[in-house]
Length: 314
Ligand SMILES: Cc1cc2nc3c(=O)[nH]c(=O)nc-3n(C[C@H](O)[C@H](O)[C@H](O)COP(=O)(O)OP(=O)(O)OC[C@H]3O[C@@H](n4cnc5c(N)ncnc54)[C@H](O)[C@@H]3O)c2cc1C
Image 1 (cartoon, rainbow, N blue to C red):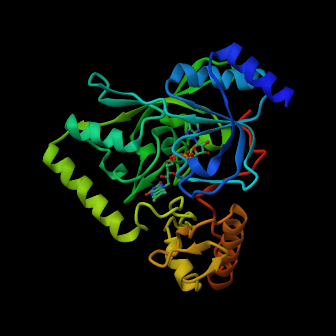
Image 2: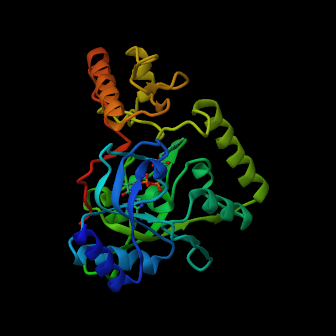
């Protein structure tokens, strides 16, 4: 107990930021699953984000950074260390660079709304993808054959020494739902995205079209889930096979473990029927993978990120 209070006090002295204790992570995940984090901090500016990360590094406190929590499955046991939730939002149009620059905690919905308002095209496919710009760049989020990495001009990260470091796309190794930021666990501060001048009416039309297509395929907005659970496998020739189709053919429809179930409208969504545990989701996911392996000889890989209680970005 004393140890906990000491850490909070040292952290406050170092950063001026107050930590919350025993915060239920289910409240910060779209899956609505997860036990308590020892410490929790929501940052609203990039300066606070950098200070918090540097303090966690200094005191060797395991930490894990989250954005909107739309692609995560937290552990039933919660998290042993500090969860930093990034709400550092800000948007600037840089006409001289042809870029929209976003602080990493900016919501994608605000980004696409701003682009529409300013008559800037190129980001419409992001309409309807929940989460922050940082989370999207980390996992190279995308839809309809496009991904945010295609638009990245520059990503500013926080170096291990606490300095800002600029990385161009050639350093970020963007691939389908992957970037080198995933393996190197860098903290994303700011992102510059390429945009072009366009007609507002056409931008709006594209956005609405994407949103309508999503509404037809995806579970209704309030359904607790974390998006597509598995990535679409890529065959040696480069062709992607929809994981949902493989799951459907494997007989996934109707499967459930406890309160974790396959969404009947789209077999690549695992949904929480109410009170599901991470253990139930992981067990169901393992059963689904085995079924697809048995029926198609393909190994599915998770797109949703499981955060065990001892995960760390230290
Ligand atoms: C209904 C629904 C539909 C979805 N549709 C799509 C879709 O069409 N396409 C798609 O690609 N995804 C989709 N997703 C998944 C999700 O929206 C994306 O993965 C999104 O990019 C997650 O952003 P986030 O801010 O919520 O990240 P989080 O889930 O909070 O975090 C994801 C990962 O990013 C890391 N991270 C977050 N911010 C930073 C940062 N600043 N620096 C370093 N690391 C960071 C975290 O550590 C974590 O490992 C969907 C999810 C839901 C619930």
